[in-house]
Image (cartoon, rainbow, N blue to C red; front, side, top):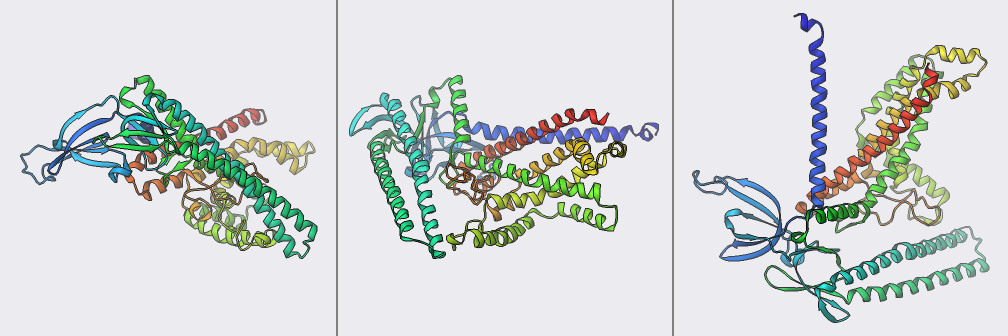
Length: 538
């Protein structure tokens, strides 16, 4: 009884609960990390002889998963042994019709490891598993030893095509659209003179001339890479001709050493982080989603911090403790509990339709009925999440301000400083760690929110990033991709669930890393401010 009355059991209980929570979080992160990062490891390719009905079929594939199937599930007697069901990725979607097959181990007659089996990563139709036989370059067939050199040439040409399409042609299209809007604006104002019309036409003809030159250059380059091909033999012995324009990479996992597999694993992770998505997000990388997530969170932080700090300063420093301020504090606390989708509906109605529509009518009338700001975009997403996280910043800042001793304020005022000078030079620096704590919590929540973003700006595939080389460089009206929505889309909307499942783990792990990185940055700034203004607290 004495031990219970001492309060020690509560200490042990609390410590145990914290330990279990930390272990659960650590275990979850390890699971997501293992499932996600192991997706990029080059897996052994097996050649199976499988009983399929009345004939034996030979397939090449990776063992994607195993599960135990009981004799009861197989319709056998209870004395029969359980079986193993293998999920095998056979790739070759355009030939076989699907990427995976499921087979019981008792139907597998043999399992070997073919040394020359290769994984061919393609830009369309997923991977291809087979044995490279030859390459075709400019109509001539060469030994497969020339494949590396040809692949480098095709990769370089493909990068040039991508650069011309995205940058040079994109800039011309942007300039043509700006010319059209300029002409329409002058027509609406009835101030378009013949000289201005002639100047616009000359600029348009010049841009169109450059466009046609680039289009001809693109046609030549596409013909150049589409004339080359890779000849591959599949497990059944049939030969397939794969256009080199579709081949992104090729590797032989059964010939790789551990060091080579590690290098390949690192290279695949780099491609996942830096490439654009392909094939309905089930292939390729997630760079646009990373960029959109980080930019949206930074915009949200820039917006929410001054509003939250000013509101907290008013409540703590200027407003009295009366019924009105108590009502405001209750409203702020209640706002923190409102479901996030409600914020999304509010953002769509108020920001997009009302504010954005008004901006379009006032400043972008020449582009109507096509909306500029009157459509979901990254600015409205950042504003919506700023309102969603505003209560966190206000409460945290007010707590920090209330911890500043009153004697410090009185001392500053006694020395002749005004209330604003006291607030700006003494109180706010001492409360800055609490402000940063509120910002850290806001960033953590904003980066993981998906539901409101689905209404105010995030899309499955964004053709361009919100930042490019065209004035004004930062395009706040554009839609964007988000890691959280990418996880939802790949996990629940993908037509190929088995192929997309590892991507869900990989993207989830990446989202956690992005949130941790943003939080660590904010924590570093907070600790720096705490050390800088520690002398004021003494």
